[in-house]
Image 1 (cartoon, rainbow, N blue to C red):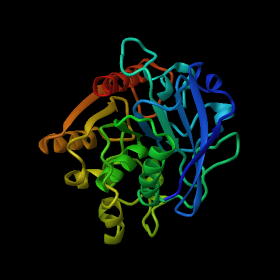
Image 2: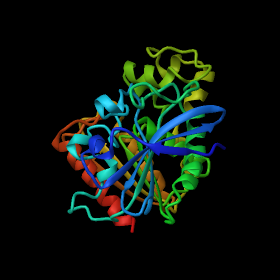
Image 3: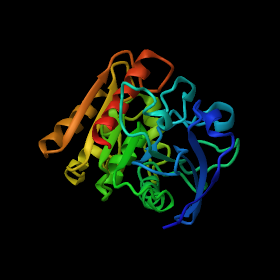
Image 4: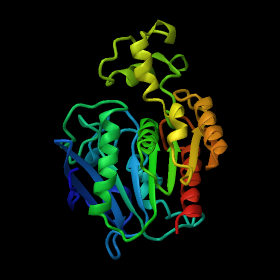
Length: 309
């Protein structure tokens, strides 16, 4: 497992997410023999402290943080100027919650995001495979680099990041709190996705031979097994029941079917886990400056405030 090192991130924290009480860092590490990068934010007073939040962005091409303030379609840095970012989770007084916290956000292999206009994680992206192993190792390395002295840990996954969070927990990670925003929870629900979503799912699955225009029944048994192996909902019996879960889905989401979230919620509740399900009106899949986005992230902030001290 690689050990992460960090340096000051430029532009300054205030320029990135519109607040002056937060320190921004860029970290790097040698993980699985490739160089990986990411960002971290923490409240300036006293250094890294409070709950540690690992944020896993959604899929999609990301631009330069410097130019666009965005990593893929992740709300952690993306749409920073609207105030829905992870580093200002508790700036809204109506949400409450701890006054200190540390947020760590990894990039994905092959540079789904880019740092300072060009630097990005190396290696070959692997959907639901190597990317999950990266999360597991980064989680442990982040605990060492950002030793906050706080026992509370959070995994937050958006879309593809929700799949990665679920698969990482199925392999042993046990955070105190998990937020799944518009999560991809069942890759085997192949016929429910449109062609564009299928293309995104299968593009980086090694050995996948089918086409995004195929139906489930037209896929080979090998391809079906590859998709089943990446289905969080097929592994609910392996997820921790001590973790507090929030699942957020938007009524206007045409990318992720609602029933995938409902299956997850019902299955984990049946196993005795505490699971909250929030359906947000006028909220689609990707975030955007809108009332729906505001309500979705307010629900996330309130959930963290409820379970973090």
